[in-house]
Image (cartoon, rainbow, N blue to C red):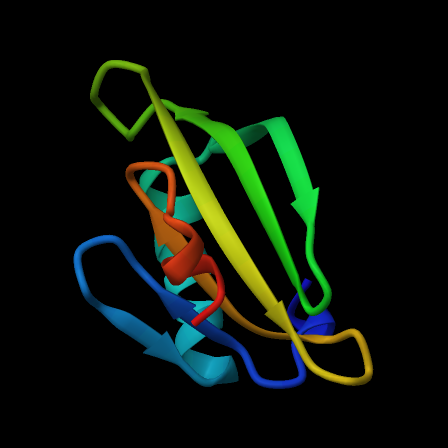
Length: 101
């Protein structure tokens, strides 16, 4: 998955930014360790010129806790080589201004 990025970067709903290949890999590993059965179910995918917006269910069971389900949105930015440069995750549907930033 990391090879789909020309520059790995995540902007998270709590304001944190995970920037760079090593930090993104650490973020992914932490998430999969905390929620080993983490999975996404696509609800909707919308294509724009250099962006993709998805709405999805995030589901999983944190170690030692009860299962959860959360509806989320993500905006993926792409470069001229069709590689991702950023993923912004939202807890509520993003506005057009947020999509086109």
